[in-house]
Amino acid sequence: MHILLVASAFNSLTQRVLTELQDRGHTAGVVLALGDDEALREAVRQHAPALIVAPMLTTAIPEDIWRAHTCLIVHPGPPGDRGPSSLDWTLQAGAESWGVTVLEAVAEMDAGDVWAWSPLKVPPLAGKSDLYRGEVADAAVDAVLQAVERFGSGRYKPKRQKAADLAAGWRPFLKQAQRRIDWATDSTDTVLRQLRAADSQPGVLDELLGAPWHLHGGHPEDELRGAPGELLATRDGAICRATVDGAVWIAQLRPPGLCASSFKLPATEALGARLPDSVPEVPAPLDLPASRRTWREIRYSERGPVGVLNFSFAGGAMSTAQCRRLLDAYRFACARPTSVLVLGGLRDFFSNGIHLNVIEAAADPAEESWANIYAMNDLVEAVLTTTDRLTVAALGGNAAAGGVMLALAADEVWCRDGVVLNPHYRLMGLHGSEYWTYSLPRRVGVEEAERLTQSALPVSAKRAVALGLAQRVLQAAPEELGDEVERLAAQLAALPDLAARIAQKQEARARDEAIKPLQAYRDEELAHMRRNFFEAGEPYPALRSAFVRKHKALHTPPHLAALGLPR
Image (cartoon, rainbow, N blue to C red; front, side, top):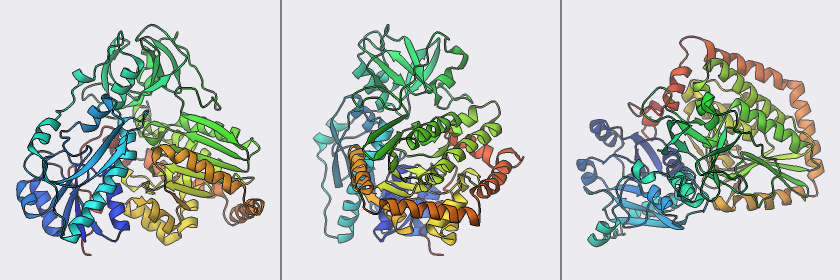
């Protein structure tokens, strides 16, 4: 059937629902609900959908639309739960299980008849955004697909919610006063719950070194100790702060208000000169014991012939410094006596490429863009030129732009079911680099590479395998992904033809290099990128600024508005 998705933003869940519906043979359109009800009505008239689905909606659908069309709302809570801060309240309370409900739009918020719902387990260490892209998205897709099937059958009657349950289930918007951390009395577990319930938005408003900040990201620390509230250490841009019974790491800070600099940055960069020289930088070895509870962006582990280089960067963005640290770790991993090297393998984002927030905050954003893309290219080149072992990119979460090209540099790409790839740069006004003009066409062909980069639309894990972007779809929950990746990597390392595969890889790389050196691809791409970064009139600076500051779109972008309409 033809389904129209109505969403406040084309966010990760909206993209996931779109691709899952397309994978099952439905056609789908997208319209952004941006406060212009007449534009929404016009989109509904143009699409004449059999069904309307709202994966993520912060405003009400006009009554005349939901009375004329069945409109299904995705709510991140079980039946009976209501309100705009469902996940925030859930994580703050430390709930171990939750759910997602698909209900029919009515005049009263979250009070419509229930078409489907799906339960989920809340992992103990996941922040709100991570949970939303992982277990919540999985449950949402299960419920949406079930609701769509029930609607399509024409026989299902949705379940009415009881008035008493609706009254009891209402929870209001969670305000900053209710998120406040009392460093003098709150335990580590309490602080972590507050931080995770506010990640990645709105953050927890707090005071630090004489200034107000929104705190983003919370991770436990099991060794460092100090007076409650004290800054104990820094590590790779994060700060460690003491609690009454331990300490927590805070990865990012954001100034409050609507000032030009009010966007998230690595905590130490946001603090700048405010950070006392007496606060030490405490590095984390790559191979910390699995039992340690501390924060680190990169870690390496080894099991027989398999090496696993895990990395997790906030929001999937990789700054110049992060790219260089990961490259150093990759070179360390390549010096180890393994035959299979896995990159990634953690839940949530794999990579979204260069770090636009850090670039925007730089004294010279164009120069920082240039440094960042150079560092990203160096990392991708190292993976492309690794010929003495097989490399696997294991994606537990979404990837975009240069992050997709980092994955394609590996010999095999494995995606957890539900991962969404965005292999394009166009929406940021960039030509793109990271050797995409080599890696993408060799995977999918020249014509498909052109289509993917120009259409600027998401690709599901299943579709990625069909296109040749990936080799495996892994059926694993986010928390189980690491074990599944290690199991499959061990099988790969045990294959009797492994040595032959490595030899074939060496021959292919030498053959490709003789036809056209990698440096030539890099030089051509960077010539375009230099214009994007430095020349007046290029759209990249304005698009970057709008993205970093989360400016609201004024209308549905043309490439989405045309989706699903007859040509």
